[in-house]
Length: 482
Image (cartoon, rainbow, N blue to C red):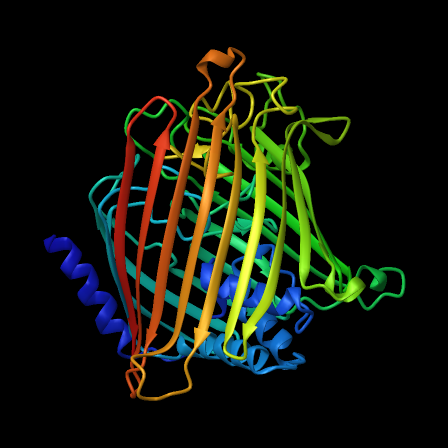
């Protein structure tokens, strides 16, 4: 703990001189729900399938927003305040959980039972430095250190491109509960990242029909763990492109590859082979464990005036004839509605099947002969939170209430809950196991009546496996910036 305090002290000393808005926004469940509410109702035009998301793009979408109700205006203003809150010089957060959730679906799930972090950031319109020093402890999976710098990075804007290096979490896909190809369940690792600032359309008349487009490319090194079976210092490459040709359609394509590592080729030629997917599956020249896939989201508001969207994702384990094969799937529907002038409601129904070809093949998804720990990092999935060979259905709902009375304890409150049904997929059906669970959460923005921003929250969950006893847990958290 002595080293933890030294790390915090250094972060606090540096943060005293910091004052600028964060430019690359990491995954954030509440921010995503607010933006999704605005997007589903066609108040803003914003593709939400690639995180971290540029603050420039969020601000551009808000500047062009068309709020028609108090709800619309409240959420637009709340998102602005969230982005601008990072102008504060110092941030502190703490969370305590009695146990790790057995069904850790969704984004921003804690990797550790306890976590305390402090930091700040400095920047201009073209430079961004974010420092977040954390100390973790308690029950977890595969942890290699009690200290980390999760969400710390340095970024430089060149034209309309952001080049950054650091431990940034990523999320690729339109789903609420998990991405088949790249989610934020595992701890973020150090990587070099390149992405667009504002998602402008092509200027060429031949390509302008694609509409707003974005890309993200990264190359990094996964975290190690004790007794790992995969080569130590395994590298991870990721490439993603999204287009929005109309105000009702978002389309994305993604590829990732585990490559290199101790005892494996990891020179420029090996990187090049991984980029172009050459020799995938051949032992001698195999560039790595590769996944590729597509995702799509169709918004119904511009088409039929209903604030509902449908989405889907398909990912393949290997490449066959330049296309993903050994595929697994995800599909969902979500909606965003007004309860009253100061209350909103979001809901989603989402199903995923991470078995191969709907269960025709097992022990394939997220597995590899060379990278024997599979598409995991420190026992946590890099893809869908429930890992491979699992079918799941989730019904989730959340609601926000805005208070206009300055004497209220909270400026706003956010409630949420979900019901989960999951089942492992095995060739021998007698070995399959079903698990059912439920979770609830609450978060409130405290009315401090000064420049301090304070958010507090609590959550609880319960899960029961078919052949086991029920288990549950609770957690509390607090985030403060000033």
